[in-house]
Image (cartoon, rainbow, N blue to C red; front, side, top):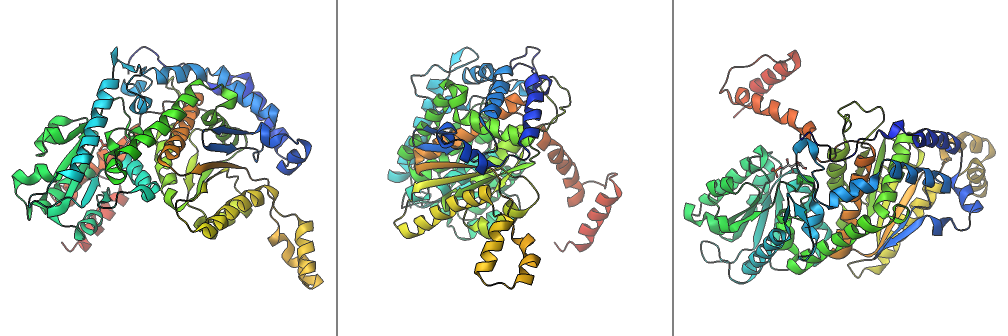
Length: 554
Ligand code: G6Q
């Protein structure tokens, strides 16, 4: 960590506006959103925004103009604009790791001025993009496997940031997939993952992308070596270069593995793992959807980056989403938030952003190294509608927790089953309506009377059928789930996470929290294999080790 402070250190809870927001939250405990709609005919116009083809309706939130003003004041008084300026100018905002967090440069045009350590890095970014494109074109036209056959299956081996983004986007853009090739993903060190994937494949026609920033991650390297062994059952060592390529910042380790340096796609330490989708880590996506669609996704990201960088705070979509999240978690007592895409192709969106958000903002120490006294990083979870309606929505409607929800919906489907789509849209809108309006005792009673329920039963069943409502939702509607709009959506949430981490006065771009478990696993492994004698562990760990050894049959 350098001694120079890049990001300002402002404890948000020491500001007067923090106290004022506490008071606003008290005032808001019993305010009903449906009353706010009645009082303000302009509420939707006031609380909605559009950026390109993405429309955000945030009117169904427990806010009024005063609350929003104070939240915006919080953003100004913590000097969010300064933070944004530093992020987009390549300053070392990842201070604990001594580097920039400069994913915005990955989707900027060639002509942009994006400087890291005094050097404009755009020629590097675009050289790799061109290298990726020419690789994908060669796969189509001239690349042959070791027996002269064309490649029909590409397997991305990576984990965490080197897997979740490509998996999510490959699924989201399924309608854009090229027809003559399939992409597969292997991440888990659980041997089932690679074994089940390889069982369907043929060495002659399969190519592996080993995607690892460090090229040392134990899960990825174990899977990569198993893939190599599987390949060598049929191919020769000198054929490896025709069947393995790599994406990494560690080119020496890539070459040591036997991969031709020409087939190594570079990225840089100023790209954080969970923000690396728009770097060469997206190679598997480009293979799946072709380079034009991949570049369209980058253009969509860039468009949202520009909006985030230049738009005033009150009209800035990522800022608004971030402030609403802060309102609920720091002032209204919410512990988690749900992401609910009404889109089967976005089924992995919440797991992707679960990592981005929780690994970035799950921090208990502020930028001055002191324990925070307020909540940071909300717990993010979710799933695709309508399936989720038949699972956890019960708790959203009638549970005891306040869970703000983001609904995400495309106005146009990518298929021609329009009846299905109408039904999907009806469900998404109805859920938001129901979460806000609920159903009062009076309404339930009326319904029961109409359905001829005997009077003595009405009072008995009534409390179970009441919905309090007043549960907040955002609706993010896009025209269609195109590569461009998907890119914009991804950048929207990336910047929401940045804004929250910035205001919470924490460092969003390190992840020391995932290191401890890794260290201990490394220490335990030789004990499991019997290469070293059992060390002293706690009684529970010792018993589990012994139980495992007693039961092991291999
Ligand atoms: C993300 C994290 C983490 C990382 C994986 C894979 O920000 O750092 O999820 O992406 O641990 O790391 P490698 O790409 O180095 O294999």
